[in-house]
Length: 478
Image 1 (tube, rainbow, N blue to C red):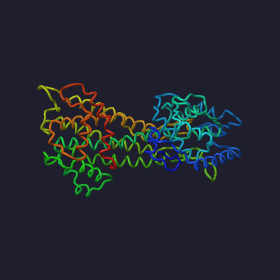
Image 2: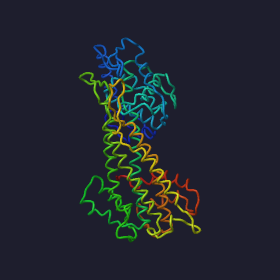
Image 3: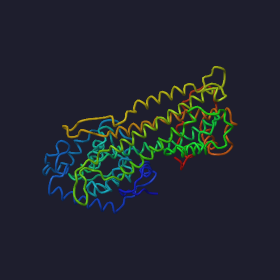
Image 4: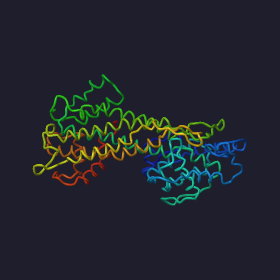
C-alpha cells in the first residue's frame, strides 16, 4: 500500500496516511526528471542574470548581489532559522516533509534532484527533524523549513531516526524554504479531524435524539428539498438513517438542539469540502518564488495564501456552531421535563449531581475555542523595510483550526456520555437494530456502566477516544 508523490495527485487523505506511517511514499520517476530539467534552467538563469535568492539577497535585500559566495545558501538557511516556539510533533513534521517533497515534485522550485531524493530518503526512513512553529505569517514557512534545510545539510541533528545528509548550495536554499508546507500540512491534519468529528457529531446527536424521544419530521426530505442549501439534504438523510425505528416522538416539535441540526451542520460540511479542494491545490502546487518554468524564471506573488486563509476561516466559523449545538443537546439531556428521567441523569441517593459538572466543562472548552475565533483576514502588517505590506495569516488560521479539533472531542464526548447514560436508564427508546444501536453498543463497551456520582475523567477520555470509531458508523456520508 503506497501513496504516489508526483506533484500532481496527492490528496489530504493520502498525506495523512503517509504522515501517520499507514502507507509508504512512492516517488514518481517522471517528476524527478522534471526536477532535473528545471534545476538546469535555474542554473542557466543564474549565470545569465539576477535571480532572486540564488545570487541575490532576499526581502528588502533583493538588490544586493551575493556574488560568488559559496556559503550563500547555508547562510540564507542559518539566518532564517529562528527556531523558537513549540516544537512540532512527529506527525505534523512528517506531514510537512511529505507536503514539501510533493510540491518540489511539481517542478517549479528549481531545486536539485539530489536534495529532493535526500528528502524522500528521510521520509521513507522515518527520520524527523526538529521544527519549531513560530516565524510564518501565511507567505512561506521560512523559519521551520530552514530548520529542515539545515538538518538535511547536517548542521542540525535529526530528532527521530538516522536521517540522511546532503549538500545545500545557493540554488537549493531558497527553493527549499519558499513554501507554506508546514501551514498546509497543519491545515490538512486539522481538516482530516474536522471531517471525522462531523460524522461523529451526527452519530452522537442521533443517540441524544433517541434518548430525548425526538421527532424525525425535522429531517423529512420534503422539508429540505424546498430550501436546498449545499449538504443540508445529505445531513438530513444521514439523520433519517440514524433515527430509523425511533420510539414515538414525545413532542410535536423539538428544541433547536435536535430540530435545526441539518441547518447547522450543513455549512460545516460544505466548508470542509471547499477547504479540501483548496488543500489539494496547495499540496500539488508549484508556488515557489522565483518559479522555474519551461519558458524561464518568473518572479511573482503565488506564495500568498489568501485562498487557504479564507477557507480556514470558513471552516472555523462553520464548525463552531456544530459544537455549540452539541452543548445545547447536553443541556436538553440534563432536563427531567424533556427526558422523563432524573435531573442531570443522576443515579443513587436524592440530591446526587449526576452529570451536572459536564455542562461547566463544555462551556469552559467552548469559551477557549471562541477566544481564538478572530478571522485571519482581520490582520495586517508592514515588514522587511516596507517591501512586504500584506499577509494572509493562513498559518495562524491552520493552528487555530488544529486547536479546535483538539478541544472538540471533549464537547462531543460529554454529550456521548449523557446520551448513553440516558439510554441505559430508558433502554426501550433505542431500536433493536440499526446504526444507532451499533453506535450505542460500541460506546457501551467502553463507558463505565455505574452511574452513581464519581469522577468522570476516565469516562470522558474514553468517550473522546472512541469518536473516530463512531464516525465509521457514518462512513461514506458527509
